[in-house]
Length: 126
Length: 153
Picture (tube, helix red, strand yellow):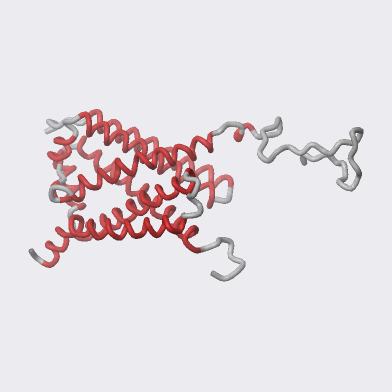
């Protein structure tokens, strides 16, 4: 980063940026999700027809993105708690971020088949 | 406006001419605006951390059930919802998750609005919109969980 910028860059700032962006994305999805779930009070058909959208290949990719956002926000949130409450938290904040990233990669690899498998089968045939 | 008296620092101090009293930073005085006399921001900060820890369990468990186990999203249907909400345990799980996630998210967005919306009017109206949407969504979700009828049709 060039000198004279407002923020300090590196792991601390970028994890903070990613935490904000993922938080906003998850919150907007939450509004939609409560509304679609509320359709169970309309009729089983209204609910099932809407949930069918969630089963399409394009939305499956978006669900994988949602999982990515939630997993990062959850793991990095635990890191933030550790930075705030663990006496060594600030000293190890970079190591904890790379731990978060590593765990995130493992969990994302594990979620790939369950979340995207049905979409791949639908697009490329079973 | 300044809490420091007009005594110049260059004049020597003595028992008859004491050093000016400087209030500690953020001390609450009679001049403190009413809006900042409570510990609301402290409680908000603590709430984000406590609710966040609980939400890690509730939300990751929710994702596991809905998107990974037993066929993933393909098995979600009205009948699946009815099966889960037949149990008070899952009703409580979803209700607590709804309230904590909405309040956690609303407080997060409140922080972001305070950070980036610079004009007083913009900040006020964005937060009114946020609070309206939040109250509506929390009440709607709560109503749906408590009034769910598996035999609606």
